[in-house]
Image (tube, rainbow, N blue to C red):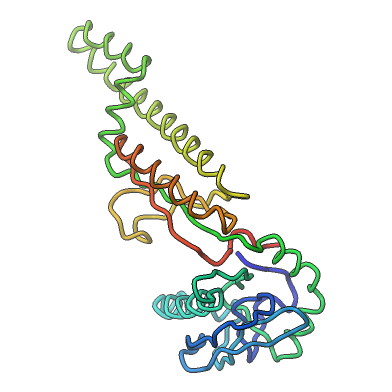
Length: 280
């Protein structure tokens, strides 16, 4: 997400590409990743107590051009997006510590240094407010995959009185009538399975929420994006205090052992740039 205010922040054709904003950081190592062009060095523009992480760019990143590139060459977008993310991830690292920063959305450009400083001046108090909100906190993600749908359905059917009742009704009917009732049974099973799936995911997400200061439910990713056969059934981002991260990890691992017996797999990853918690 990142900051998406209008005017200078958005999609201006320019010479400086902005990756992220962070507080002034003493002792942070020089960023070694190359910029969005794959050639330019990444450098810092300081402004009061803030730092803008930028690089020069010879390629246009106006919205119209990005859309055109995406239509003509999806590999170009993927390559640039990965370069964008590499810089942000390095900018948030200081040894073993994850620094708080505000990641910009892909394609944020400025005409020159002055236009960046003008934007920083205009939005300074809001930027500081966002940074204060995520200070000493990390974004982690939890994703659940339905690895064994048949196992989950069997458990639902075995414990669901509505389904049991319909199965008993069918077993006592003549073969012809039973055929039509079986279609009703399939619908009932599907309905109860979806209901139990929603309930299971709600309980799981609420359990992990106890270890976080905030959470956002994200869109489940398609198989084409995950590269996995099993469907993703839950995707949640959590904002967690630095000192609570290990508790979160242990909670995920314990929950994963529990839900594996029901046909699921729970995974966590992080820390990530706080895209989901840094808009204003």
